[in-house]
Length: 61
Image 1 (tube, rainbow, N blue to C red):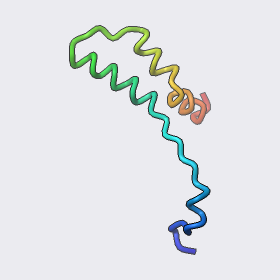
Image 2: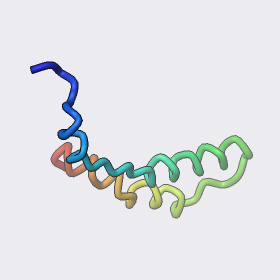
Image 3: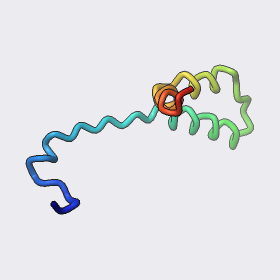
Image 4: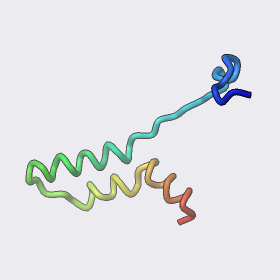
């Protein structure tokens, strides 16, 4: 069987992009570039994001 998916198989794909972790990190980097204070709340946005929590779960933490 070739490595590419058949047309009927692609209809069963369900992809969910979770970008909350990346968005929280970008917010922190934006603040850093602007010499603004990075708060505990900013870090909590990263550590409580769905993306971060899923990654930690995957790592077994």
